[in-house]
Image 1 (cartoon, helix red, strand yellow):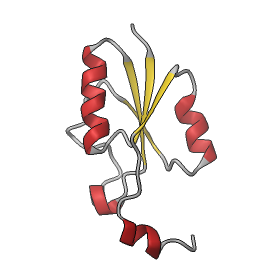
Image 2 (image 1 turned 120 degrees about the vertical axis):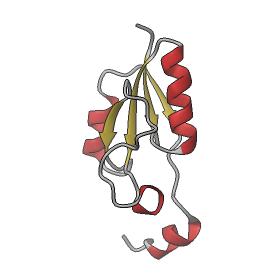
Image 3 (image 1 turned 90 degrees about the vertical axis):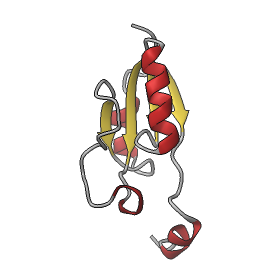
Image 4 (image 1 turned 120 degrees about the horizontal axis):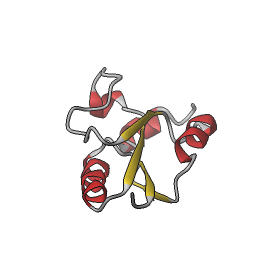
Length: 95
């Protein structure tokens, strides 16, 4: 088994394709994603297009406990998470 890689935003377009490539290269892949409703709808499950061999952690990158859980045992982190949209980010700025 190759390196253990965490992809933040792993259920997104870039993150999921990166996961596919890393799996092909023999890496163990974990994805951290909040499954933001603006992107993933109301589903609380990983999207069907995410490879079954990806270990999925549902959580927000701003949540220390979720991040601690996600980084446990990984040697590489690829940061692909991003705010869904500027408008949505500004709407939630007080949070």
